[in-house]
Image (cartoon, rainbow, N blue to C red; front, side, top):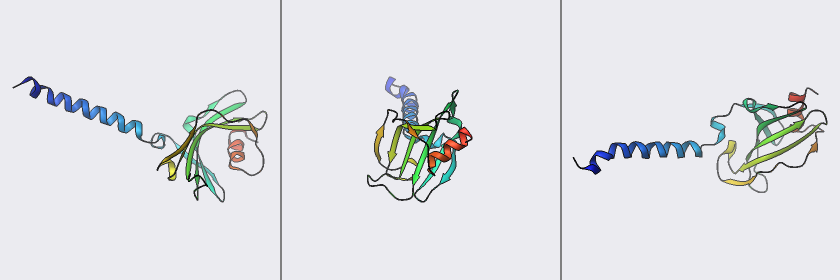
Length: 138
């Protein structure tokens, strides 16, 4: 048996493990998250990952998905982002957003926004208001 023949099973296992690791990295976070439907409006359904909730004294952070019922002007049909809510001041902001052309984080990645947006007042009957009420109890 030659040295090249002796290495083949080991090399195949290594290639298989490398391929499995690449596949796992490419799967959307949807697979590992605990997504729960929070609410729905005329144009969008909101989901949150309850296992991702991080609470502070007056704030909380949670991963959310917006599933649009029709593509927006940029071709986005779904987006995942980190929402941060300030219960004391009735404010919210989002960041780490990735938008996709397909439903539930599938299709082509349309754009990404890493930084957090500016704080906005939670008001009206928006889906952000619903999430605020769930976590802040107001």
